[in-house]
Length: 108
Length: 120
Figure (cartoon, each protein chain N blue to C red):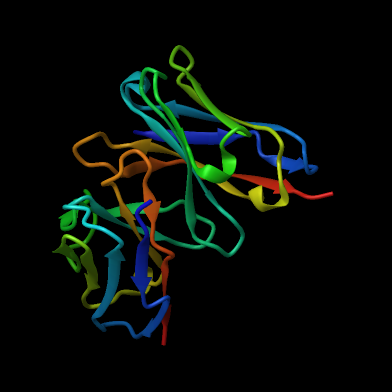
C-alpha cells in the first residue's frame, strides 16, 4: 500500500500570510496527487488535481507543486475562509486511493 | 448540477447490519465509478470501497473485506453499501464520492455524508 505523510499536522497562521503544506508518498506516484479542503461538518472539496491543476472555481492563491514522492500545497494571502483541514490523496494505485492524515490550518 | 445524497445511517449494535444508499443526479450515473469514504469522529479520511461503472470491479479496504459489500443500480442512479458484522471501529461519517476517471483519479464530487454509530 502507498502511504501518504503530510506535514505539519497543524499550522497556525494569520490572514494575509503564506503557508505551505507538504505531502510525501512512500513510493513514486507520478503526477497522481490531489488536494482537498474540508471544513467542519462538511464534505471534502477537491481543490487541486494532478499536482498543480486548480479545480474550477478555486482561487488562484492556491498553488500545488512537486513531483515523484514530494508535493506541496501553498496558499498565499490567506483569507478567513481558508482556515480548514487539508488532505492530500494519491491516485497512483487506482482505485485503491489513500489520503494523508490531514493538516489543520488554524487562525493565529 | 451534480448532486450526491446519502442516507441509511444510524445506530447499530456490534455485529449488526446497515445499508447505506447514495442517490445521484445531474450527470450520467452509469458512466462513473464510485467510492465510499469514511471519517471517524475527529479523525482523517479513510477510503472504504470502490465499484466500477459496470459493477464488474469491486475493491475494499482490508478492514472491511468480507463484511461490507458495495453495489449499484444504474436504473435508479443509486449506489449502496451493505455493512454487516459491524464493529465499534466502523463508527464514522460515510461519504459517497464520484471517481473522476482513469486520467485524473480523484474524488471530484462528494455527498454530505451519513453517520453510522456502532455501540452496545
